[in-house]
Image 1 (tube, rainbow, N blue to C red):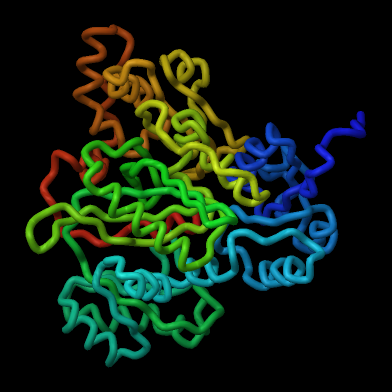
Image 2 (cartoon, rainbow, N blue to C red; image 1 turned 120 degrees about the horizontal axis):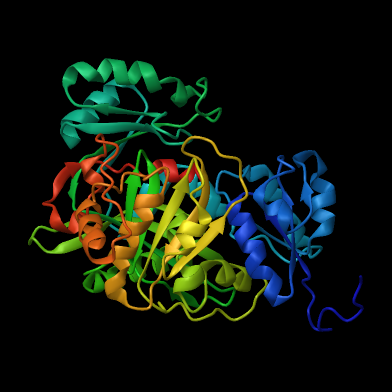
Length: 450
């Protein structure tokens, strides 16, 4: 069925082209539809999650994809810059209405060294780091930063690949031999020659992130700081807002606003941060990395904010006013990895919102997320205990909520005390109750796992 007057006569953008067709593209399309916009996708998997919401074009069909859309955006920062350059060129010629975010944001997000240098240029604190292009420079970095350090490829690398923790002098040669090919571009991790980056270890107590949207007129609206817990390098849980971080909110909003204005950014961006102590012993934040797209740690905003990160990204891309980013109610978002839970059991938990990505089950694959937002905030932790008890993959949360499970079982009689997986990483316990510890950033894998 066709509708001749489906769009207002003033609406010149009707279709949004999204580079990528994963769950982020799917949720962007879900947000676009109520606003009156359709989406098409450039994605080589014809059965990708986004295929439920629009036509999917193979990368060999780039010209057809371009012809089908009026404005363009992306869901994955490792999108080839050559494709983005072509879309930027079309926008400059006036044949298309824009490519958002800008190319420079991808260029920086794809290069850890450029990213850290940008932060420092903008007077945003980071872990100490040095550029490394030779074994001699690596030895100098170890002496300057002090051991232990982590050596990483500045481009590419994920899931522990492309990095080497140097704990003692005898590790230096092995680290250099393992990663040196990236400097010349001969390695399998990246075809682009690029120096390595050596990062010093830091004491940090929590990993947090802030998400913001920037409109085409430069307006910036920020969401609450949230706390993130990872399991095997994959985001397991996000709590929104992060408890006890109101004193850090201004510092975080200032940092992400500086970055977005510097890049003349349009759309949603995430900034990942570490909470540590300054020289006076006060809490402060260090910037880890940006994600120039909607982000996993913002999924809670679909139910938990007045305007979701997905809707605000669409609004920015099509040049509509940004929506209110205020938190509606405290919530917790949990990633479902590998195996789907019993949806009836999930939805039997008050305040549970289930989002399937329509993916086949596979170990450690993100296939859904669940947001808990009970009406009474005191029910949030018991609801999490119930959820963890029924998740096939407990993403390292079972020990954290073991005591809550016991209490809930006593009061409610319907939750189990699940102590499976004795190898749960202790670092995934609630970091508010732990002392600072010597650690190194471990969330680079999020860039490669949407």
